Image (cartoon, rainbow, N blue to C red; front, side, top):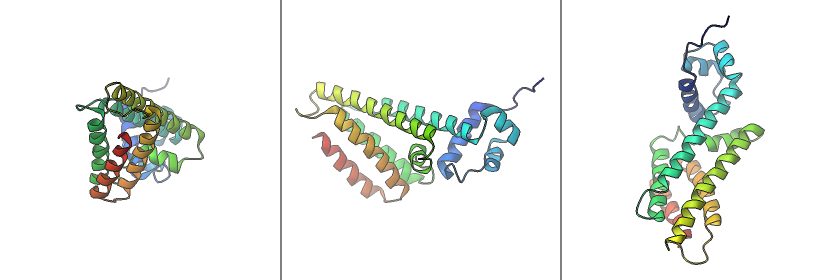
Length: 191
């Protein structure tokens, strides 16, 4: 008879997510994971199948949280431009305050580009982000916040791409002034 699991797998996924964000997939070996999670190697494999299995769960958790926060934050503020400005600057500020804890989505796309499951999850997250932004921009268009001829789908695709770029630049420690200027330039696309 198998013994019951002596650790909370959801807490383990959260802890692993933070390690993968900080160090990346390759620089987070199984011994570092098991030490952080306070479990043995056998327990890790029994619960998640492999390091890849744990990484997939951590990436899924991260992406779900990212999209939920985007969906919430894009609707805050008196108008879409204000909400987007606050959202983009919050990302820039978070990265500037703690550049070691970058975006797991960016590191997944760059570090694991040859792993089809990882890339599929990255693509799904990008599509979900684009969908959230498109809906917000369509609503903005309907309220008269966008000029005629603006295409919410194109703007959403641009902003989805820009968000990933700002995450990379934050990790590169370019400074708040640079990021403020970049955000101002990006928001001019809404004019």
